[in-house]
Structure formats: structure tokens, C-alpha cells
Image (cartoon, rainbow, N blue to C red):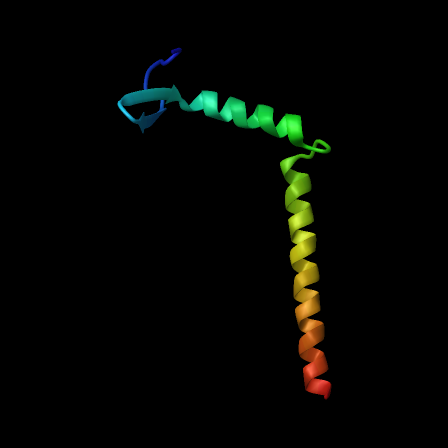
Length: 72
């Protein structure tokens, strides 16, 4: 299984079977699925930058709505 030292595993019990899967296998599979389905490659920094911009826009929308209520 390629386990060494204090390797971490996922324990799955189904019916009468116990399955041990090294965590690295799940991570590798998740990365492969992402690469297969991602429309374009993005870095973590790209993602965080987009989320910050969206949060700022949401705060701006909320502030604008609050100002409209005070004016009326």
C-alpha cells in the first residue's frame, strides 16, 4: 500500500468489508478530477482574489441599500 511511518489512512466499512485507503490516494484522485473538469487552471491566489472582490462588492451593495433607506 505504500504506507510508511505515521501514514494516515481512511477506514471505510461497507457491508462485511473493511477498506483502508492511504489519504494520498484520495488527494491524488481529487486533484485528477479537478484537472479533468476545471474550465481553466487557476491558482489559490486567483481564487482568493476573486472571493475578496466578490465580498467587497457584496459589502458595497449592502452599504448602498442602507444609504437608500436613510434617504427615504
